[in-house]
Length: 196
Image (cartoon, rainbow, N blue to C red):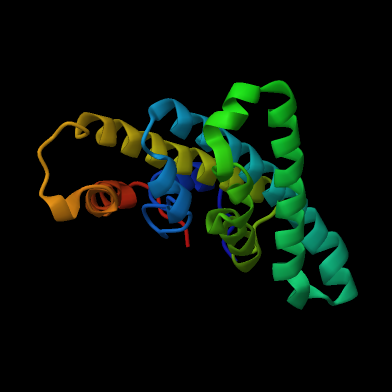
């Protein structure tokens, strides 16, 4: 297997292998929360933090507990448990110290647990056989890429808020069209750096 520089993985996971715009993972909260830039940025920061931390935690659990015991087939369940526990911890901390942020994120904060992008990063990490530094770079880059996409969408939605749109395109319709156009725009970065 070719050793990929963690810096390459980091930038590729932001631009060319963006979880939303390349893999279309994490779309539910992306569409629902991208109405306000501030809320989108806050959720993006929470997702980035959770992604970076759970990827490293899942790396250690997978390589030092599941593999030696021959329980690799339990990785889905174990990864979900780790993600759920960590998100619960983050939710309690945000509720305690950042009450306004907690109420602005509402139901979407606990829904980070079921954000498929977070589980996807941990699974891609094991499938691609990343080492610890590559895994951390992939988790952090994926979170920043997710944040970049949701904040960009919030900015675009704010600009078209008062635009005259056909009735059928209002709301999620135009959001999905914009997401497709953003995905095409990010496809332009694919010649710069690519990971598989």
